[in-house]
Each structure stands twice: as C-alpha cells, then as structure tokens.
Amino acid sequence: MKTILCLLFGFLLGIPLMAQDNYQTLFESTQGKETPVYEEVIQYFKDLSDDFDHVKVVEMGITDSGHPIHLVLLDHEQIFDPKKWHEAKRPIWFINNGIHPGEPDGIDASMMFLRDILLGKQQLDENIALAIVPVYNIGGHLNRGSFSRVNQNGPDAFGFRGNARNYDLNRDFIKADTKNARSFQLIFSWLRPHVFVDTHVSNGADYQHVMTLISTQHDRLGGEAGSYLHEKLNPSLYSKMKEKDFPMVPYVNAWGGKPEDGWAQFKDNGRYSSGYAALFSTLSFMPETHMLKPYDQRVLSTYKLLESFAEVLNQEGNEIVEKVNGDRERRRAQEIFELNHILNREKSNTITFMGYESGQKPSDISGLPRLYYDREKPFTKEVKFYDSYEAGLEIKKPIAYIIPQGWYTVIENLQRNGVRMTELRKDSVMRVTYYEILDFQTATRPFEGHYIHSNTKVKRHEELHTFRKGDFVLMMDQPVNRYVIEVLEPESEDSFFNWNFFDTVLQAKEGYSAYVFEDLANEFLNDHPRMRQVLEEEKAKDETLANSAAAQLRWVYERSPWKEKEHNRYPVYRLEK
Image (tube, rainbow, N blue to C red; front, side):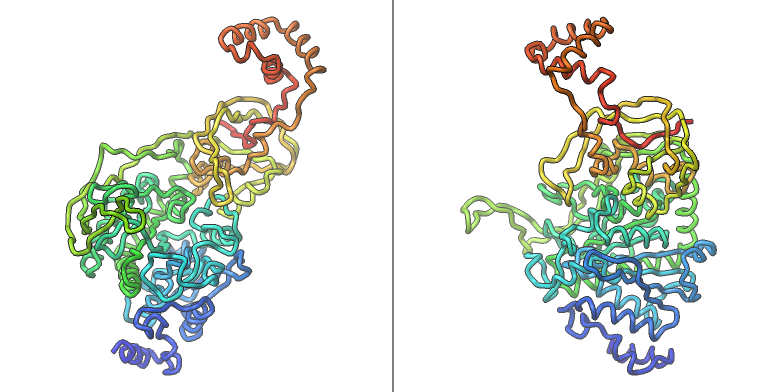
C-alpha cells in the first residue's frame, strides 16, 4: 500500500517511475530489520537531489575516516545559502545523524522523512530551510557488525560508537580533537540553526517508552529561547508524541537508582552536541530511543518525533526565529554570564512514567543478587523530575580577550566557531588582567584522549603587558559571547583550560642548582628582611617545611624575582572596562 501511495504521489508530481522505485528504503523493504551501509545512505540522498531541484547535497569538510561529511539541504526557494536564509528570517532546522553509528535510527528515519516531504506525504512549510547530515561518524559507520551494542534489539548489522580514531564524537564538540568535529563546527557556524536535533539510542533501565528526549537544559540555554523551550516547546512535543501513540518521557537519567523514584534532567555541557548548540542560543535536542525496543518501533518513533518538530516549526517557526535571534543579539550587550550550573533538588515537576517493576534475584552466574525488570508487571506512575539548575559561577565579561598568537590551536578553534578576531598591527602595551592558576584536580584515567581538569581555582592579577604585532584581540560585542566565555574562562567546566589546551604553562621550564641558589637566596632574604620573617613564621606553623632545607629553598624561589613568570600563568588576557 505504501509503495502504491508513493507511486501515486510521484505520478501527480511528475516524478519518473524509475526514480520512484529507488525511493523505498532498505529499512522498509526488510520490514524494519536492516539499515543500509554508508555508500547506500549517501546514494539515496543523492538520488533525491537528482530528482528534486529543491534538494542539494554538498560536501563540507573531511573526517578522520578520509571521507567528507555530506550535508543535505532542502530549500524550496533553491537558494541554498544560509546567509540569505538569515537575512530573510527563515527558520533553519538542522538534523544530525549517525554520531554513534550503532544507533542508526535517525539515519533511516531521515531518509523516509525527507522523501515523504518531497512526495507531499509530510508537510514542511516552504519557508523552512532544512539541513541534514546523513552520517556524521563515517568511520564508525564503516566499522560494521552486530555485536558492539550487546543489548540492542536490532537492526541486523550496524556501526560502532567510536570514530576512525576511536573517539566518541559526542564528547568532542568543544575540544575538537577530530577532523569530524572541526568540520562540524564549520558547518554549524555556516548554518547557525534555530533548531538542532541530534538522533541517538539509549540504554539503561527498562521501561515501556520507546522514545525519550534530552532537551537542552533550559536554565543553561537562558533567555527567551530558554523560557519558550521550557514553557511551550517541550510540552508541545510531549503532547504530540502522546497523540501519535509514542508517549515520551525525558531521558531516563536514573543510573544507580530506580526510575520510579524520579531522576534529574541530564545536564548537557558543551562537550555534548545539544549543549554545544545551546551555547549559540540554538534550541537543541538529543532524541534517545530505547535500545531494548524492536528496531522498527524505534525508527518509527524517531520519524514521528521529526514529524512533531515539523508541525511545531510550521506553526511557530517565526516565533522561534524571533526568540533565538533576539537572544543572540542580546548576548552582545550581556554583562554577566552564568556557568557551571548545579541541580536544585528543592524544585521538581511531576511527569507520567510508564515502567516495569524491578527487583533483585540471585544471579545464575555469581549467585549474588542482580537487578531485573519484570515486563509482566507494567505500571504507570507519577514521578518527580528535577529540571531546575542554578549558576555555580558568574563571570563578568571583559571588553576584550587578548590571545598571544602562539596559541594557534585555541585561535583556530575560535575561528571555526564564528568568533571574530583582529590582529594587532603593532607591538602594544596594555593594562590587562590575567589569571594565576592556583589549584585544580586532574583525572587519574584518560577520558577521550585527555586527562581533564576540574575544580579549577584562579587568582586575578593586573599588570602592564607588552603584546606583539600579530597577537589576537577578541572584542566581546558578538552574538557568540556565551560560547567565548564558556571556553576561555578557565573555571568553566568545559573550558579549553580544563580540556588541557594550556597544560604547558603548568610545568616549570627553568629551575636552579641548590648549592648555587643557596647563596643567592640568602642574599635575597638579607635584602628583604620581611620575607625572612614570613619564612620563619611559616616554619613555626609547618613542621614539614621546618624540617626540609629543600622545601625552604623552594619557598624562597617561588617568591623571588627568578621565578619564571610563565609558570601557572593563564595566557589569555582580559581587557577590563
């Protein structure tokens, strides 16, 4: 029946019968059991582009696999230029698929959804510009098998979570270690979408829901878009999915506990796709279908969610553009930025959760108690959902940041994200603030190629500093100010500092020979009697210091003019008001 309808739509639209035959997806022809290999996915979208003038497939940037990222554009006006879309205040919707290719639901759903728009089965207002990445993690998609997600219920074969260099790309949006992420940043900066959807599959607890949703945390998003998301858009999406027989709940973030006891909203920091997009005031989402559900149900629920987004955009696209664009403009003049949000457990909402009773029973392997869910005992309960976060840190923006040109990895990262900077035309002396790194914690095990820092503590200093011709000045009057603050302020959870971009300043490069420095240190203390007095006071309080000649010599060195000024100095400077 579906094929007959497609043929009928095609006939009415003047589409050749041969082209229509190619529009059935592998997912459909295998009754929801299979998903296509990479080359077939790309060819499917190219076929649509060949047959419909308002679809265009472009290559934008390379990936670690050596393959380019393909971007599929739908534009009924056939302009295919985001700059002109923004000038016309058209809603821009960006869908990203295959970031974890073992989770291909969005790939198949997007193939069918775009086709159905073109054939008139789905309605998408002609004013809306749609961009789709068919497969983001190409290396992972090429690494195809059926065992990498041990608990997943289909499809028959699928890709692997890690990319060609075994990075989890949904941790790479800030640090951009991969070519994939660097290309994505350029694409995102080019599109500047109003709505972003990144499709996923979830594991964890068992429950009746097929679809769960991570909406970017509304307090972190802030502004009018944050209020609109929380008060209007989210309720609308949940209502529509219920009407489509896929009742949805927020992502079940109940690790280590029972879902029926309630859970906290997932806080999507900037390392994650939706959190990254939110730094640019984009309304962003990560749909998470449930991996234990059959593949056909998961794809259908993803399709229905895309349909729900389309319905919202058809009705409220202009309002979304107004709120997102307004927030971006307000970022230019915003003075205080909130970071490091902390869950407020004093506030909660009530949501309807459809779960299964859980319990403990002896393990057949160990004989010890193990968790299980009983699908013969479904339940529907009202549970608490904690979705209020408050700022853990507030930062007042400077007039500008000044970045010495030697830190080119930082500069290039900023440029890829649409940050405007200018180079000094001559050597210049300016009064600036800089941070001294006082303390931080470092992970003891690697995480995505890094031993990341946390709980960073800094001290501010002011000085006249000489900058060189070619150093970069970043004026803080831009729509991307929130992103800049997030990555350049070292105390921020996902700052470049915490991602190890500046670790070379944490290691002293010079030292001293103790037997030589001993005499210099004594002369220094003789010339600075107050310093000697402080040393004696410290020794009286600290037995370890008092009993260590080496520690006392180090104490003097750290406070002497010979101490290298670059050590623990954060090399991004603030030009204050």
